[in-house]
Length: 300
Image (cartoon, rainbow, N blue to C red):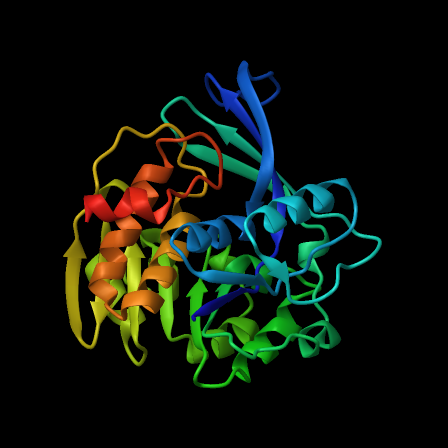
C-alpha cells in the first residue's frame, strides 16, 4: 500500500467571512467565522479522502491549537512520524474570505516552523512511497536548511512532490536548488511556475518545470490544469462549479493528484481526478473539504 509522508506541518486557520476587504485604518464587516486546521493539514486530508495512507513528518507542537490539530489527524487515521515538540503551539493563519470565494492570508509560524536535523533522523521511511514538501517549510528560518539537506538524501525509490507555494520568490537559492534537483513532480500555480522558470507563458512554464523529472502539474483554478510529462503537454479540463470558498483548493488538488497517481500510475487520470476533487472542495466552506473518493469517481 502507498504511503504519503507530509513534511509541511499543519497550522490553525482562523477564517473570517467578509463583505469586502477593509481599507487601511478601517474595520471589515464580518459575516461569519470558523476555526479549523489548515496549512499542511489540507493536502493530507485530501489524500486520505482519495484513499491513500498518510503520515505527518512535519512538526506537531503542544498547546491548544496543536491539540485540535492532533485530534483531527487522529480522526482521519493520520499518525505523526515523530514526537510533538514541547513548548511551541501550532502557528496561526488568518484567512480573509471575500464573497466571491477569493482569500487573503496573514500568517505567523509556530511549531511547524521548527525542524532540526535530529528531528528528521527520527523519521522511519519504511513503507513511505511519496513525500510531499511545500515551499512554506523551506521559508522558515528554523527549518529550511535541515529539510533541504534531508530531502537531497531521500532514497530514489521515494517519489518527491514539491509544491513551491506563494512564498517561492522569497526562498533562498541554497535551499531551493537541492529540492528542485531532487523533485520527481512539481505542482504549482501559474504565478509560482513563472517565478521558478522565468517563463510567463503557462504552457512554456509547465514544459520547463517538467524537464528532467517525471512531470509537472500547472494548476489553473477554474481553467483546470496543464500536465507536462515526457516532453508532452496536455490541458486537463476543469470540472465547473460555483465557488463558495477557495481556501485550500490548491492543497486539495495536490493531495488528490498524489493519491490517484499512486493508485493508478496514470498521471492524466490523476490530474483529472484532482481537478474534480478540487472543484468539489470549493463548493464547501472550510480549508480541508476534500470530497470522498466515492463522490469523485462518478464524475470522471
